[in-house]
Image 1 (cartoon, rainbow, N blue to C red):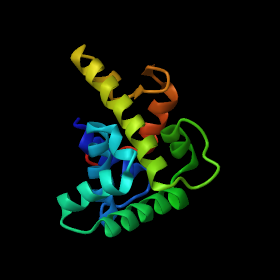
Image 2: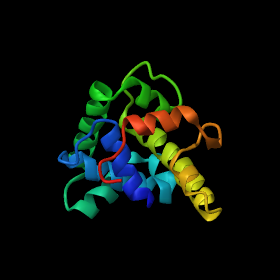
Image 3: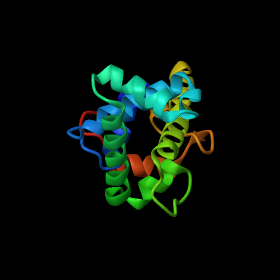
Image 4: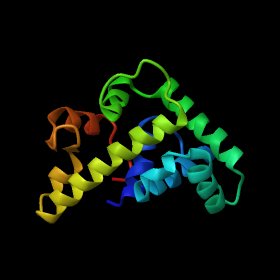
Length: 152
């Protein structure tokens, strides 16, 4: 599974519909952060502008729509899934920069783990790889069963 598709699936699992404009912006943004983490240093000039260029919009629209995505996740996500995603409990709604840090770190670890498991021919392990412990996690298996993507 490609990381971009995984990013979209993860957003859906966190309660964000693909009908939000920020959905595509968040997926594009995290892919750009995975290419170059320095984009987080200057998020407005380094990330929002690149996403805006890709989607033919302004950086202000990108920032606002990603903030909406973060709000939707914060207000609607299953606490157990959100905790798994963040690697712990968040006390307050994260800012956009923190959201991209968490999202990209999680996605990078999952993609790397899946690639390693897939290369070894262990397809069922690839789907249930947990980046926090570096192996298949039974808790994650239960979570994935709970939030099974209808496309899979």
